Image 1 (spheres, rainbow, N blue to C red):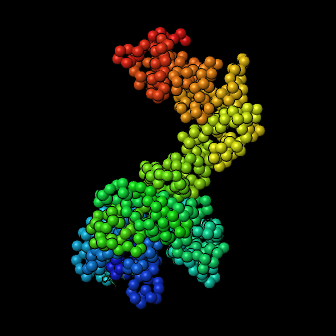
Image 2 (image 1 turned 90 degrees about the vertical axis):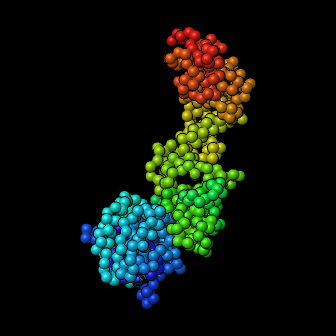
Length: 624
Ligand SMILES: Nc1nc2c(ncn2[C@@H]2O[C@H](COP(=O)(O)OP(=O)(O)O)[C@@H](O)[C@H]2O)c(=O)[nH]1
Ligand SMILES: [Mg+2]
């Protein structure tokens, strides 16, 4: 099945065409039929010659009912965009196209209706040109008359091609049914209908209703009028629910698969690319303080905080189930500005698409559904700089860089299932943050020894709280040599090589052991000033450690493990002679900060000779 929504200005023949295609009247209400005006969403369906079925969601074109239109179009992958031959492009043609574009809908047909009333040529070319500049791009275009029937067989063929070209979502995708109706039916109880964009729902499934997160059981499923045992999206669904009554349900709620969505009332978004008209990139898009946010069939009020560039933080009045990468739409309901006004700058459509009328509609992509609070000074700018580099949709690595640590289940609820191996249990960590935590644990243990030389070690709970970790098991996973953990204490065991312990204060000894463990993993990654300071190693302590033979001091600021100079000279002897400092740096896998003082140290030790052109050459081949 495919689900396709209509779009287009009021009275351009949308409902009439759906009636002609399906034999069903999408105008369900008596008032709609009496007035000949679609007010609410209508539903009708047909079978293509291939057997594939198409469910139509017919939307109102009148500007007063744009919220209903949005609820219909929000969850669908394709639209039938209609323009009347005798009227041409109109304000709601522009507004509906802006909506389609903001939602990022990429599939559709252009149908010029009422071709018996006027030459469809001008409407075809004007609408085709405007649509081509939207997310729909080049679409197949045809002219029809629902009155004479002309063009209808061609439209059915085109619908077949459109249906065949639509992406096929994975049947295992998480279920999120956007509710557009809820009612009670004698005999079956509570029924909700909605669009299921992807995933599979089965009879007997337990789903959760947002925003209350109350669980409900699917007692029965109907689709296009027939009972079915299971249904895979895209589809129109009517679900008979146990565990709730219809008056607690309504449009904009969603039925979601537990654990697969984040119910959130605060999100970071990227607004759609602004057109070339935007004057100053630093000023960012002009945005009202409050907008209406539409996601799927849901609608709520969003308080807007501009972060910088095209990035904004939105605080929602009601929580909505979202994934990162979801397209949402922001609308200024009160806005009616002259075309080309500031809001037009972020519309991403050429001015003509707006038909001289500014619909004040913004598209946005959700980047983070659990954004960290912006408390520190300059936090907005930092957030904008960080989010600005994220792809759409963001991946696990991006989210981890921002959050440091995340449970795999939380990431799944954000809509990201691919992730690196956990560091412990289901905890995922950003590699740089994790390495930093490991360093800080060593520092915390060394500092603890300094404060309480006689204590057997740092309690795990104290370590957890010192590092601000959410789970004690993360401390276990962070313990690396020389640290050990036993009986709930993290400690540094005495070195097991025999010989008298160097005559150093316990604090210095503990800190040096932590340093040597770093250098064991990366022999030429000399600790930086911060690391030395955090470990409590000042110049005096370093000099004492050097006298005790535990560290090799290359310069005031560069310390390595004893023997690192011999290792370096073996590596450098393997290079084509003479060699440059850059070649040495690469061979030693280190930075200029370490390579230059190390080479100077080797010069002084008579291991290398510095040539007039600044290259170096080994003086004597090492024995080993
Ligand atoms: N002559 C003619 N009139 C049409 C055609 N399609 C629709 N109409 C008329 O146009 C008016 C608006 O149609 P409707 O389907 O309600 O438009 P909607 O608001 O876009 O759903 C109605 O009076 C229809 O009878 C057509 O192909 N030819
Ligand atoms: Mg209609």
